[in-house]
Image 1 (cartoon, helix red, strand yellow):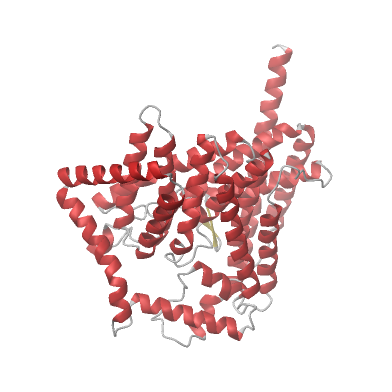
Image 2: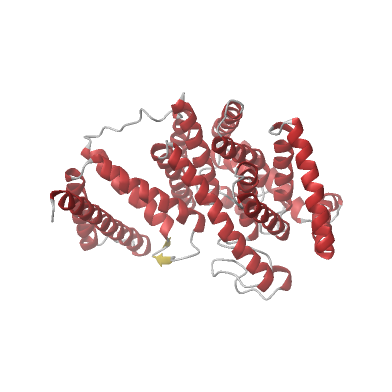
Length: 491
């Protein structure tokens, strides 16, 4: 074996050892946490083996060059992103009072190797390539405030659970910004999002056609014909899938606009239409409105005059062809949309306690909770506890706010809500300002999708019961900040 082959073998061998020892470390860590959450006792043998495997990991990272550790971290981040979209739909198993699935495993593994490399560099962290410090400072402040709010939280378990979800979401954003700061990484992220979108649309079409669901779906065992054919794919309920569709449809739209080689426009058009069909099938009124607002923004502010005319012509042409070949389907979809949107005014004017009136009562209760906490919030994840025990207006057993903005205000208080609002508006305005200067087609394609998604998000986030654990939401903001960081880095 030559010298070059020997070097390659050593490098590959060390990579394998790093991954293997990382998995061992993570396994023993998870078993220890799971056992403690179940019995309240920490097993010394598992703790010992966990520390031993971490020591081996550290010794290996000391002997491997930094660029190879960076390679392992990048690979893990790609796998983490993919598993983040799939959630707990596959390879999920309980461990005490927590559940393990690939996203959590790979995210913790990222932290293990990151901390190992940090020790290797004697505590020094290279951040010269990070140009979105304001946003990261806010996210870290949010995490600290959430941890501090656990002191006055009544339901400590809910506070810990909320903080874990928040930590995982912010960790995803941090690692994405930290590692994805070049053209290849951003293009790969965009391609991953689009390909997974195609996969989930295929699953959703099968659900609508057959009424069969993955085991993670709340409708997996239902016999109710009204619920059996609602698409959920890898999510627990329909509203989560609808929110995912609202954030993902702009990627298909911009892919169709900028990727004009071969059959890409046709594929993206089919994907867009199928995604739109599934969005209608979810019966999520908030996401109907969110999608329409996003499309209106795209048409009015991101298209040139001649492009607007082309879009209108294309829309009427596609609609005419669909009506010509599938008249009953087009009429059924149109009727479903009109019925769902009309039901909003019907529920508001009705005398019975409708789902929309319940949501209004949830918001009014939350405002009273904020007032009662002197503006500091009821504590991380505690709004459900307050809704169950201290509500003023009737909610018919519904405890989740179904409103991300109000959830932030009620849980964390006025200060954090204002800072989050500044965070969101600043991100949108920064991307919008950059969009006007972009020339490269791939950059405009990504930036356009992110802008439309950001416009749709405020309304779409009012659909799900809570999106603190909704991973595509964190992945979307991770992508947005990574793209903004890349643009600032170029400057």
